[in-house]
Image (tube, rainbow, N blue to C red; front, side):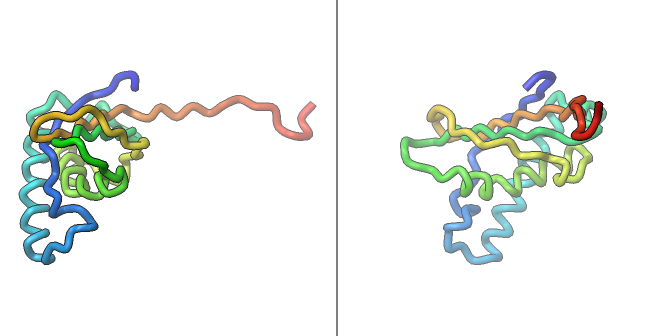
Amino acid sequence: MGNSRIVTFSWPSSLLSPNARTHWAAKAKIAKAYRRECYFLTLASPLTPWEFEGGIALQLVFHPPMNRQYDDDNLVARFKAGRDGMAEAMGVNDFRFQLQPPRIGKIIQGGRVVAILAPILVVIPIMKYIGED
């Protein structure tokens, strides 16, 4: 992605997974802590909100802590609190994020989530309309 910015986050708790049978109050506490962590990591990054006036392409690369099979949709759901914290730190509504297909990267001890953000440039193609001479 051209003109992209990268922010790295810790691996989200397995208790944030939709498949976890976590009590709602415990899950809320963990989600709040992870959101706060991601908020401060985003603030500490070189992102500037003015770079992202329109849509924002969001590519998530998940570097798991161990060699096992992960469903990409569950990983995205586990990162929801992190995404909210990132959006809050950027001063944008997270509806502006247009999630690109998530990727699973190499194994890193402790795990990491790498968010790659890039402005979406709207290009309107010039095309010949039906019936136009």
